[in-house]
Length: 475
Image (cartoon, rainbow, N blue to C red; front, side):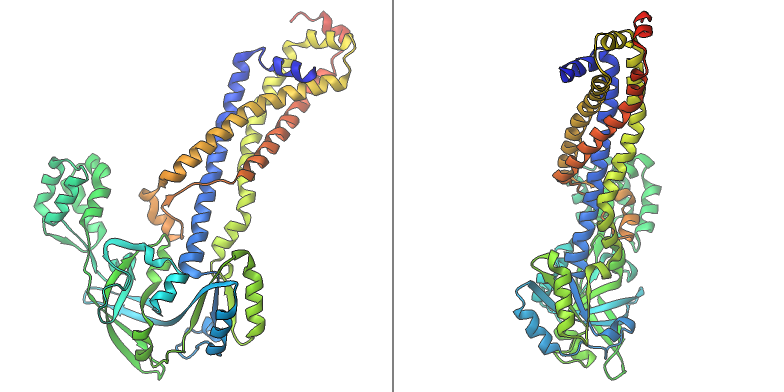
């Protein structure tokens, strides 16, 4: 009976109750969506760290971590390869030759870690091949001599990327729905080449209005971007005999991941091209990337390899990407902290509503206590009213929050306007929110706890009422 009375009491002042329910609904929706957004961001960062940048494990010569010299190759390479092939927990592995080098063209230069890879094995460990940009070549598919894959950031530094309004660019703009009036304004710079994005943006701002740049600028930039494929990049590095070597490679593809720092540090060539130039044999390499069948076995596999080969260093992705690991370890706590702050703020509104309800029902509560309703039942009734008030809004809020996460999880949220800052820290500019079902169970418990705690002050006020005096009050 107490449950039935409590539910009916919630709706006695319908407008006030709906205001509180709406506040809880909006707060819960915002909390669930924010948590889903953060989880999506973190999961994308983890997938990028493991499946694109690091793998689950990496093997090094201990000296190579302190000094990236060419002679610090992995010892016992044949024994290690046999061990990795026979370990059923290991899905794939790939050996890499790594040389710190200076890359230069006639228009720019930059320092790069030149990585010699076996293409087929690398594809099994890293999905970098999926990040080749449209109209920017291929992942070693052309079969030319001395091919190289560089990043979009490196292409910009070496002036291999430029912006040009060619005839096909105007066709692309027309197909993308850009008004002819906007395209006409750009005819003045047809076939004019801009070596940097900033120079091109500056010219656009001179030719187009602020509104046109804001609305069509991103599409124009995308259409005008061109890469000078097959451009020669000369790399200078020290070989195994400490001789300074220069070798030209031709750009066959350009990639772009969500981690600008990773992009601007690495370039990829064929191991069969790089090793002979550097004076290394086919069995000499500096790094082995490992991908596991089950990521939960990470520490066990790492320990087993380290114990079997004490002369090498085995590092997990958590050690190689500590920012992603720390965020992953503490993210579950962050979700509940967010919801905790939201519910804490909402609790004041709930308490205020229940206090008003007690004041309005002083005479009624006095009569109930006078005819024999004990304090436990009075407390239970008020506590249930508060929980119902909170739970109704929270359940609807969780449903709306879940729907918003599902929808945006398919469409993605584009933060490209500030994407450069995110990608500089390794975070994606386009985010796909996601949420675990277990999160809703935790939120429900927090909502019930909020309702119970919010009922304490109103219930204490009700329990302090003197039945005789309360009956005399004219509400």
